[in-house]
Amino acid sequence: MKLSVVIPVYNEAGTIREIIQRVLAAPSEKEVIVVDDGSTDGTREILRREAPNGVVVLFQDSNRGKGAALRAGFQKVTGDIVLVQDADLEYDPAEYPRLLKPIVDGRADVVYGSRFSGETHRVLFFWHYVGNRFLTMLSNMLTNLNLSDMETCYKVFRADILKRLVLRSNRFGFEPEFTAKVARLGCRIYEVPVSYHGRGYESGKKITWKDGLSAIGSIIRYRFFG
Picture 1 (cartoon, rainbow, N blue to C red):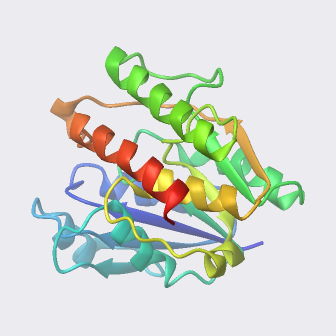
Picture 2 (spheres, rainbow, N blue to C red):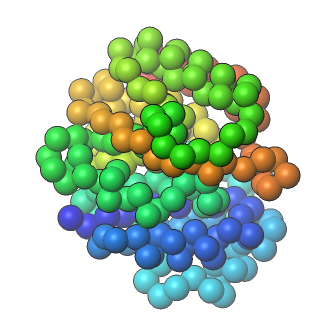
């Protein structure tokens, strides 16, 4: 099966070269689609000059958010399986085989890579952890799922599911929206543990408490109003 890796990027000049190399080195047949979401720190110039041959690079005219960047990338997918990869180094592409296995084996339609299932992770912010668990619990209550990490970057799914989804979120609301809609479709969802090498705000972390409040609204909106 061919894998399509979609990487939304915003102001990641310090990591974009390495994450692309790590993705290309991961053990699977793949295409790589990078979507620059209006970066202003030199990321766009790096991609224009240095993107390896075969890597598809798309440029958004302005910063519209992760969800908007992913929608642009999804339109270019030609593989059998789609994997969302953040452009920082918090998640390790070497773990792709673990993420792909439930789909390749025919058991799953969607796989979430859980940061809270026992793998190595960097110890960071208590309130971020509480916020993540709260958002996952609220999402589970409204979707009747039992995920441990709804907000994870690593969402892997059969490409044909995209034909059945209408995604609207522009920012981090993509996570609860995608979750609500694959639950509504009755997709077979699995979780596998992944390692997590989180970074602090001094290293470029962008998500804030405002995004948490927005996620609550998205969980409710996409559960009841599509």
